[in-house]
Image 1 (cartoon, one colour):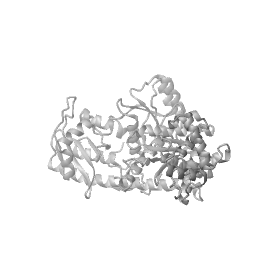
Image 2 (cartoon, one colour):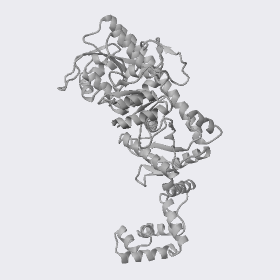
Image 3 (cartoon, one colour):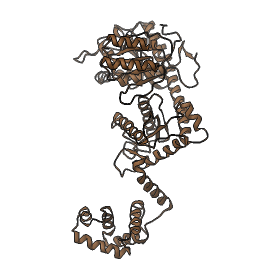
Image 4 (tube, helix red, strand yellow):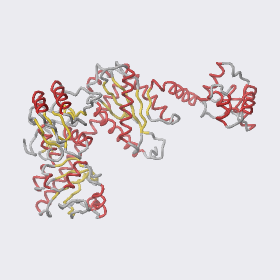
Length: 556
């Protein structure tokens, strides 16, 4: 393997083993130095098996039976996958070894305690380093591949002779060096969880460490922490990473003692280099996000460039599921006057949705366009209704993952089988989101095929409001009577129509005796001058009640 300062493949299996090995992954069987780049990270689902592209790294969540592992390895060999990751300890039976050798697929073990989701994020972060749109292949910063924070961490570790982590402002681990086994169990716990444990973060906060990092651009020495469980026994030296007045993150070194003046100066210079790389990662992510959003927007619009956009996204010539998620911005959390907070939450939602879909299918595409994050997921066969059922399952899985932090609403359109179908399905997604946003259905997921009637009513309501329509005819007369006489005729009519003419049920819904309800119903026909036995008049009144419920009353 090349040393940290050399230009090396960004998506090579050997690189993954070198950078994530010892702490997260171990090579169980196979050759990590086989030629070729890793093309994608794919979660294996035995109930809905995706078609991973050649060179994929497959995460075998829940696989432990040697027979199942051997069968999957043979399949992955036909698909030219690069490696299969299993939970350690890997059951390396003769059958598994033979299948791996025959398939030419390496087998890696994921350390116990490391979440699969964190491994997936870390792998994608590692494989994406330096691959921002428009970046030159040879582009470097300080002699290291641009944006390659893992290479930077290893270089700093060599300078300081200490294991290194690079973290963002929220103490999330962005990258780490080798030699983490020289630190203490808390460092390993931090990397496995990809986040500084809350109990340590609380102690550091109480000691004023984070305050000192924010105020100073010099290294801060941190004494060991004891929490009764083990704490961290090796002292730390940390320094903030800054771009002007903005703090981007921090560098943490596990050192037995303080740093010499020479190494402290090297750490200060390293912080400047890390800032350049973090800005490069941010810029590359922003460019990629904009390019992907533009391509997805062109595909969803269905115009002249839709075909080329789908080609560039790798989604042409196959049926697609069209999905959409949006923030439910009616609650107090989403004060639309705070534009920056809304934009931040929408971006967070789009990034989270893209990550979720990439785990569902490696060729999925997702991007935030305006207030909605749209997704295109290739359909792997089956009838249209099965596709829409799968779409709802994907959306439900996403809502379950994001939890209550910022509960979104989600919609699935009809399966799109051609270019015009993509644009039509996107329109259906927008219409369903409009209904869900209204809040009358009290649900968070909707399919167009089950909510078409509600979307039509919603569109009629919008049209009526735009025109300034007010209730007229029989309904207008009833509203006017109720206003002047404090009557309950409109409520009586609505209850009777909702109960499909069942007087007993309608009377119970408004809490009056059946005879009283019948009397009011007769008054409805007299005051409204309408015939409730006429189906056309009943339909007209039902539409008026649904469409004009928010309209102002008729003028007196």
